[in-house]
Image (cartoon, rainbow, N blue to C red; front, side, top):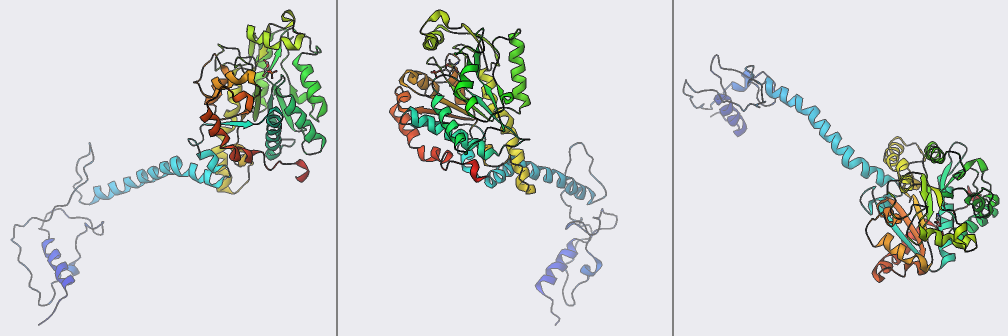
Length: 433
Ligand code: GLP
């Protein structure tokens, strides 16, 4: 008795069933699983009894892919093949979409040292830090170290300036002293740094001891190696004040935006001279000073209210908030580019994932403003509160300034000090570069 394998028997049975009737539509040969069986496969195995099919048995009908608005294809397997081919680009597009949406950011982030930092709060969106130091001196030193590290890590050179926004007032004095010290020790150079000051009084002669021009020159610029042409301060005596403000904004833009905006606040929570009620999207402009500010600043004018200017030019809240724009959107692209292509663009590296605004708040008289800035919602009556929504803001304060904060807020942020301190430890030096 001749034998035939089970597989052959099965194949035979399938072949038998698939025998089409004359004139019935047939699949094109070789199409995915739907092709006409070859004549060889129709040959019965010797000894295998083939079940008889009734003559009128219809060929097996196969499923058709119904495309809307398209008549069924009478050519057999053509439409399924076409549909299959059409699905390929769709699939590819889908894969590309998933890759761009999910994988690229992850790959980029994983390849960058700022990975955990960035992912710690909504990818590339918001990170607000509160650094609490024991006293004014420590807060000043911490801020100076941070600025120093930022500049050095940026690796500024002739074609790549680091841009720094700067404040005035008593608060930043300790920080400036430290920066001067680093410079004098040869650890830090401002040769390739551009600065933009936050504000200036209107109508006060430039050489007045209380003008912000005098302040910056006496307390900082004359002690460092910055090119005076790179130190920008609004001119409060310009013939057209609004034109002066517009030109200032333009200069910031031309400099490529601010890499790090250092700011100070008044006891009423104003940043620069953005008095309570200022628009949170304001740009550089003329402002009338609030009575609180005039009272607070009278100390610089022999306590005589009548000597305090009543108007000032100031960067807007929006101007400072923009300190994130330039690089935030570039970061991802540059990071992906540098990682994939293997070229160090200098942008997609650690310094691109750092904080862009640093606000110094010290002293018990600023405690209520700090509370408004940190624990209450964004409110244009406390313009510093806008920075809750800035993606990378760091508030540097002393213990006194935290007096109005909840114990749990202080505890929480103090518990993160070991993380914050990584930003300033180790302290870099240009001697090593
Ligand atoms: C003024 C300035 C602000 C500064 C504030 C704080 O209002 N316009 O830019 O931040 O004084 O001054 P101080 O540090 O002396 O409290």
